[in-house]
Amino acid sequence: MHHFWIAALLHLHWVLTVAAVPVPGGGSPKPSPQQPDKATSLSKLWNTQGNKHPTVFIHGLAGWGEVKPLLGAINYWGGLNTNLLDMLRDQGHVVVAPNVGPLSSNWERACEVFAQLTGSLTDYGVARAAQFKHARFGDNHTGNAMLPSFAQNFKNGAATASLVKINIVGHSLGGPTSRTLTHLLRYGSADEMAACVKAGVVCSPLFWTNKTQTYVNGVFAVSGTLQGSVVDDFLQATGGRKQLVKALFKGVVTVNNFKNLGIWNLQLGHHGLGPKKGEEFGDFLDRICDSDWYLSKSNAFFDLGVANQADPVLSYVRNVPETTYFSVAGVTTNSLLGVSLPQISTLIVLSPFATIIGTYSNSRLSALWRYTQSDWRQNDGLVMVASSRGPVDGFQSYEMDLVSSDSRALINSAPSNAPKKGTYNYVGELSHTDHAAIIGWFDIDTRKVEKIYTNIMQVLSSLSA
Image: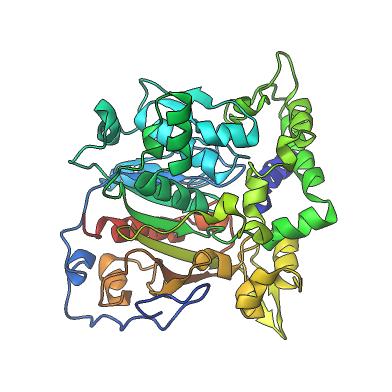
């Protein structure tokens, strides 16, 4: 019974979680392949010096960071049988994994990542707080910067000329959270700056609009919900979302007799939704799901709706021209006669959602009109291929073999021209790979997922600094 509920929790992510000029919502022919005898590294192939920027890993909804493994054994990045972050550290990379609100909006999650990286008070913004009627500040991380060198960028009240940049890897909802954070680190927020001036208060550096360069060098979205997930639209329309969230969370909490799950700091106190003294986690979850916040536009459920992507609350985010973006999609379905059905290897708890996506039709959902049925119906059990490839404003095809067994094979699979900045370079599909397998959950043989993240880091570290 314990194992059933552990598995159920791990798959709560249903809730969460080309030419030089990209075609809006679509792709274009991939660049010419590299000649195998020309380069000995990706940086040489792309004519760069590479970079050693630290990499920030951002989890999806209902996920967790590095505070501690779930139930003492399950790493978000690696699952039961490997710790991908430690593996990457052993390879010489600097990596961190913040613990952000598992039910929160991309805006709030971006603010939480920034506060943890810089060791500061979480500031959700004066204008944002007024708009959604919550407190301005959240958890205080002062003195506990995950990346002290990155924090130095924002000392003394102005962006420094000597930049310390980061790379970002985001899984599932971590994909659009990464994009939101990258946008804010480059452009800030004019609304927030104006609200701070009007209120006579100091604005968070995250919202400064006088930045002249990007602080994010590269972004890699792994099965990212970059255009939402029709699972969310379907369950919202059928009334099933709230019931399933409650059932899964309550089951895990009850079976494991947890009173206070420190691993899940829901970070909703600014909405007046902190746990009460002596309150069972299940009762706390009831209050959350029955609150005004749950029905607002300031949570992950809203951000995951395909129908909501054109709403100004989300559509303000744009790609940064100086940042190089990548994306990869997992696929665990087979397309047959216009529908996509789960493969036999799909985890059993993901199969129903793979079927929902694979057979989904909604003539009123105009976002679907831009794509073929196959684009939307092929999926990883929670996210459609069309959503994982890139946001509404497009992507370019840039196929690479992320399961290459060594550097030479990865180089040989890469296009000869450097990836284009300011758009998502879609490296392709990982076949027979569902939403959980792409981060290593339940993998007995961890070699495939270890290759994927070794290669992702090689790609990011080969970009120009």
